Amino acid sequence: MSISVLLQKQRKRGNEASWTPYVTVQIPTMNEAVALRCAEKCLEFDYPKDMYEIIIGDDSSNPDVSRQIDEFAAQHPKIRVLRRGTNSGYKSGNLNNMLKHSRGEIIVLFDSDFLPSADFLKRVVEPFAKDEKTAGVQARWKFTNAEQNLVSVLGSTIVEVFHRITLPFVFKRRRISFLCGSAEAVRKDVLAKMGGWDHGNLTEDIEYSLRLMKSGYRIEYLEDLECDSEVPYKPKDLYRQQMRWAYGVVSSYKKHAKDIYSSKKIGIEDKAYISLVCSGYLMTILLAGLFITGALSIVTHRPEPIDFGKFFIYTARNIALTCGLMVASLIAVAKAKKASQTIKMLAASFSYGLIVAYHVNIGIYKALLNRPMKWYMLSKGGGSSQTKTNTA
Image (cartoon, rainbow, N blue to C red; front, side, top):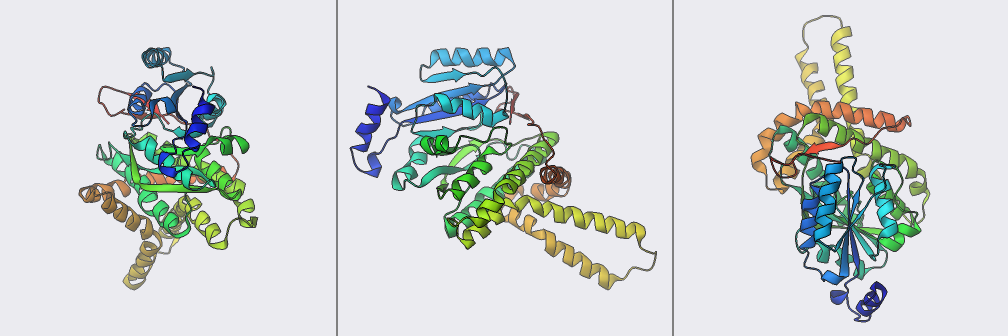
């Protein structure tokens, strides 16, 4: 039976509970054998087997990884492997290539280190049946290696703040959300109509989210649907990840800010919340400014006895200006039911966190000055001490 016939058959049932769209699951990868672990989990979906396909977009330069992917696909007919012979456009270029070959009405995306549950596919497509203006659905991320070391504690906390505080807060008040690049679903026809993913964008998820909002579409956030994944556990990888994210978010916001503020399809409150989400990384500029001015005052100030009154006033002021991030981190850790990580999180924030802030500022300034930035591949454990792969 053809896919079009299957889709028509599903629509004739006439209710949301029985609406079962044909889905294409996409797994973009480059030199990542751990992508096969993600594909294995996708094969276990409790979704009608004849109503979804899996595509692995393999941009690998490592022939051994490509061989493993081919051998795996040969054992599972549901899986197709696509190759471009290049990494042009990075992840977004890979996604656009897969888009051309995707047969699904809905496209579900996973980065290689994600491990969806068996019911993930069924639950992530449900919101599309309720409203045709819903063009995207984002699930919450959780992390299997959050307690691996101080670096992973800090990396998971940064993302937990976004997924347990920022996104739920904004979505509950204004029904606004953003795609996050993985554990997400989008309508294929809307994506194609809007020209696909922004080629070469380092945060194609945020950029596409802003385009959807400008066009009057909505994105649902499912905070009760979680998907396991990993965070960087090496300092250099965390620095690069956060620098890339800061660069991509600021670049995308700068690209669309004028249209968003002038759009009649977006209300004033919605514009404020969009700005709130997109400006999160800019807090590090304040942190950097306070650090620099404080250091300069020590060097340039005329030596004299300490004025303890001024000292405590200025210290309290600086804490008030910058404590929001720490308070949010503590709340996020509590919401994630990881209170035992509090001491480690504080230690990571005042050590690795300071260097992360430095790299975030580099990303922001490069974005503001239109300087180029390349895509960095990050080392992750793949959930096993025996698996060492690269994931973005």
